[in-house]
Length: 88
Image (cartoon, rainbow, N blue to C red; front, side, top):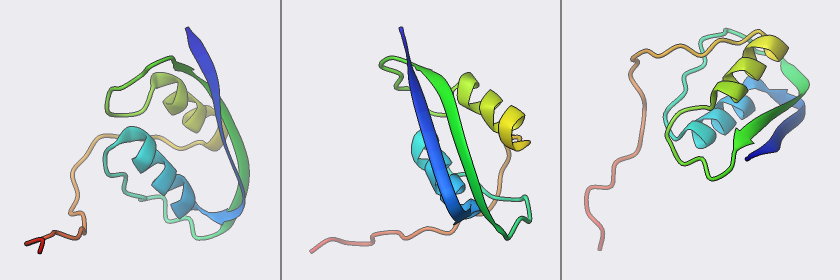
């Protein structure tokens, strides 16, 4: 069983898409496109019901490539984060 999922932005920087992809994939995503403008786009893809795994679905990855020309590739990079040392 599949459901249709969508993501639409108007006049937003690519960082909005990066944040969405990080949340959806459950893993860090680093923008190496060098794009600095503001964009409008609408994406629609099919998602398996109850999908729980880390990473992006094949369907969403294909839409990113075919609609936006973006390719997600596995890699390593330093990632800045906050670390909680101790809670009071």
